[in-house]
Length: 247
Image 1: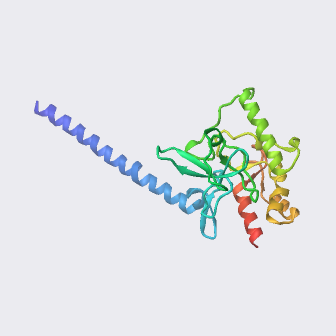
Image 2: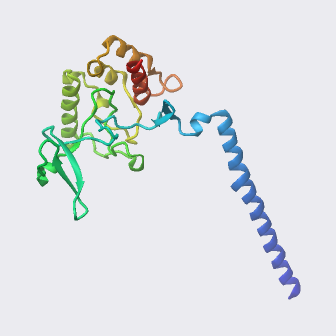
């Protein structure tokens, strides 16, 4: 009986020693080694490919984001379906209520349903996102290509993009009206960037040829030479645009 008990204790102790050794190796040493290697060899990628302007983080070149109109405090400006600017307030019941800035009148429920942000004409705009570029809501709309709602949505987006950039609808490329699978794609096609050139130049008082050159300088080639299409990183292009405008 004593021998049986001692055998069980030895097996238990051996298991505990194996657990401790593997914990140290795989739970501490290996992660620290990989972290050190990543920081030494690929510091930018290891830290999230963060983009900075004047020492301030403005986003990541790996994750798309909105470039909407904001107020002096950097908060998104809101507009009703007719284009009138509104302010958001927390109601007594915890819901959000809206009032017009130019008169203070409250919006009806129907008017409030149409409240949304508007893109800033001074910036190049990204493609649509099913999750409003929220990293916590990554995903697609799951609409099929023949879904009536999706077809109507694409038509509305095409009309809006064409009007915003003052171009014919037949010049609007597919990525301007469809979201990526992740909803976080930081890139747009060169064609979509080019139809935005005149609008951006006009809004900033810049020479369109100069803005077009910025786009051409930021066209990235296909991945490893043959995967995907040529593309433009919107955040990196907008950073270069802002530097040009301030310079």
